[in-house]
Length: 221
Image (tube, rainbow, N blue to C red; front, side):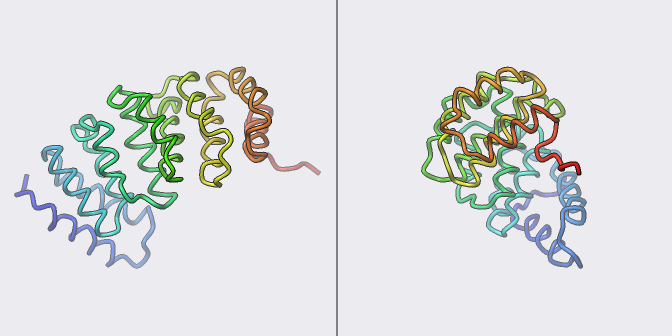
């Protein structure tokens, strides 16, 4: 591996993104893959240093993706590391990468605990509450190694069932819908038990998914 210089690597990433005619995911992802190849033999602390510089350069979501695809770094994450790399997160897209690609796998692999996720769920920060919910998808999405975990998923959903922040409401719906393929009866019971607390959107989308397999089925004429 070339001599590791986090600042130079991050600036190279930023300059390549800035040179693109259109800055969208299909065009940026090959740049991320190229950086991943260059840091394949880096140590976790070096990758996390690079991620912090990328965050400073307004490439937060890509910093998280870079960590996800560096397996030694991903397996080194604990709650403290996730909170440090997540400090200041304040947009939907970045939170969802943080939750699905870092917090979710760390929870599934036992690197963080239920108490860590519950602490995020009780945060006054809407984005950390959303992170707690999005992390549950890591327990339930088969392609990410999930195997269905109703107790842990529903415990987080219960903590936030009465939350009316739009970002949280949408994440509760997502968390419950990802659990349906594994335990639809448990999801049905949860909706019934928390009927008076859950937002109308959650009840509508999740019940649609239970009945039709779709969040928002099109109306037939």
